[in-house]
Amino acid sequence: MPTNSPAAPSHPVILDNLLDPDISDRGCPSRTRQQIDLILLAIEALELGGSEAMLLVAKQLELEDIINNRVVLWRLRCTNPLRRSHTRRPLNLEEAKALVIIASYLARRMTVVIRQLLLAYEQLSQKQVPIEQHFRLSSYLERFRAHFRSRMNPRRAKVSVYNTDEKLNELALSLLAQLLFCTGTSGMQRFWISLFDGEVG
Image 1 (cartoon, rainbow, N blue to C red):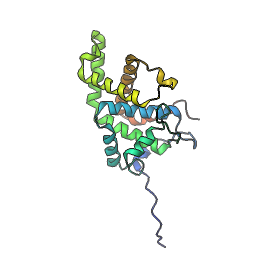
Image 2 (cartoon, helix red, strand yellow; image 1 turned 90 degrees about the vertical axis):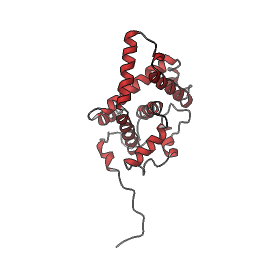
Image 3 (tube, rainbow, N blue to C red; image 1 turned 120 degrees about the vertical axis):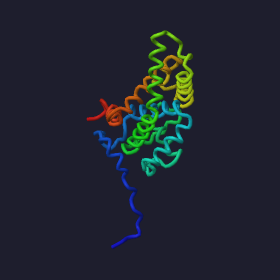
Image 4 (cartoon, helix red, strand yellow; image 1 turned 45 degrees about the vertical axis):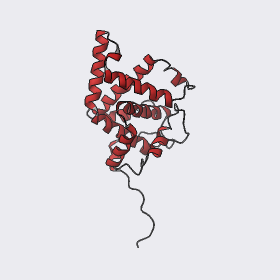
């Protein structure tokens, strides 16, 4: 017989592209939460209006039941314990998958730019030319440093390590390489698995 009870939210099929690691019911490990948020931070430094782009991709991929507005996105990212506004709520697998899928789709869209920036860095390093000589690379690094310093808690030991422009530039460039990794064949799946290395079992 039909009932008047509301239908349960449907499970987005796209989430099935990522395997479930064996982390029981305790939610995603701290390192996983940190890495996901930092990857999204790099995307924001690459693309002005990054948060809006994330929400648009969530809508396009039918992930709105998980991330339906800016506040929800912010709360999920604040599960990163390095943040000033860190919240103790767990990040479950479904939420983590949604964030990784969004990051991977945005990275794929920016593949050409990411490749250009990494190539520019390599060429500048070989010629020992200051990074500031390349406007777009310099702008990305400057925005990343600003985002990191405004959002991360300097009292956390893992944050205090990045106390110079040089250290933050190194982090920003390593995240750029991770974003490129996401764009390759099965890149999203390999990136997802890497987030749980040493954390399962």
